[in-house]
Length: 284
Image (cartoon, rainbow, N blue to C red; front, side, top):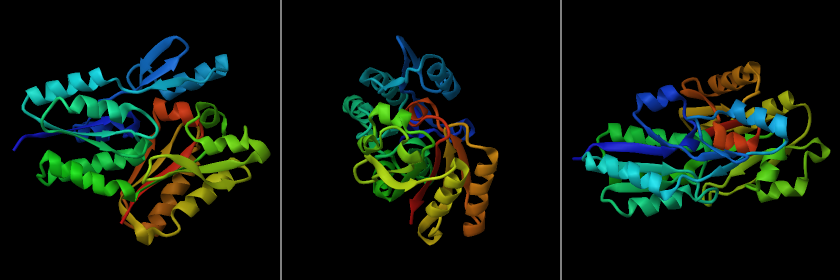
């Protein structure tokens, strides 16, 4: 049986040590600051984006991985005798997945999975693919197993500021609020069936109090959560005390959960802005 290589778009936002440990190959999306283009997590990082926005008042733009980048990667891996399972950013958010499928059609034993998700919620599916590979499954079976988990992923995040998501146009319902109307801090949920985003709940108050309420809301029914991995992710600027609070709630409610803390990288941060907090998990 061929060796299976797991590849994933940079939007999986997994910590580098986990990527290295699992031999995951990352395909970076592009971030555009003015007329300059950068590769997510390679030559640009979230603080570079926030500094640029603060200095210029102009929000970044992002671009999908082009088909040729996928083709070159898949060609190299398959020429070395490998099979490939690629997990992509939600097709409702980016054309990266369609581009990967276009490239994969040129090769045998390259399978693409639409995560219908983003950030480390997508990363949870990448790690499940690694789990299945460790069990000795072939590429097709891994892809099928991961596809079956896609509807079970739960991804929500709470925003401190609506400006990035509103102007980026990735969540149409945010437009209803304009920019920070009435001090609303919305929780955004990804629909695991469509991969689209919508406002799930509206919070009001100081952001640290909102974070705590959001954390408790996310974890109120842990009996339905696969506690093998739960992610606490943020886009920078969330205090260590809030991260510790989230960790404490998870530990108190689950006893044995593996907790991953992750930093959203450039593509996600470009659309959410700083001080975004997320809890991600897979339902049983």
